[in-house]
Image (tube, rainbow, N blue to C red; front, side, top):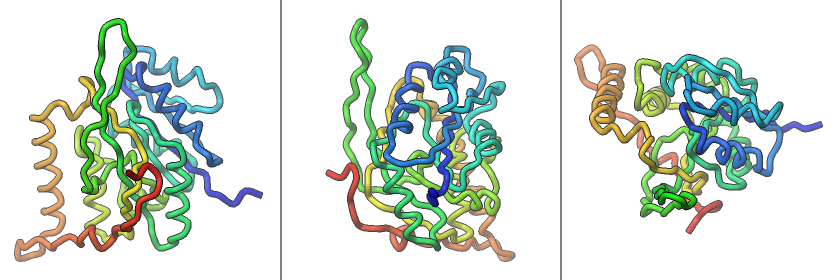
Length: 251
């Protein structure tokens, strides 16, 4: 009898036909079972839904009108059945072994509800008539609260709520800030788990919107932490929750 918990990986996808197959394949090739893959086609006008459907029973594809990434993630959460939840953007790729590494850390630490690793940025370069190529972007040692390199116990969404669908950007940061405010036990480590691909279709290319939603996310956090006198309670340091050890993808 397999005692390993089911992992549900949710992929929000909008006009992602050129990337989606690689994302799905990177999950299917993981050295761990069972895994449930849920693709939420967020009103795509290209072949995104067809790509997801081509995997048959191995991928569950849900379609909805276009509502944005947080709504797509919430739709995925509403149908996912796993005890452990992960996310993969449709244009990202998991490194082999990343889910086993993450799950091992989660199971070895019963008091931890959330584990977060790191990703490698890659810039996509398109040359007419040639396959796309990717160039690594210089790495930093900073931890970034990013869903694609996180593994989360399902019950945490019952405690914190789902993603704020009014936050068309920074919905993930807003959720992570709620986790920090409520002192959720989490573990950060330095293992590189995924390839984060930068291209002309990234939603974060809209710098004006990115600045606006970042400011809104920070203001909401401050408002939640203010006491009756107006002073904001400080957040705990992430450094105290960091595992200083590299394994998968280390350089």
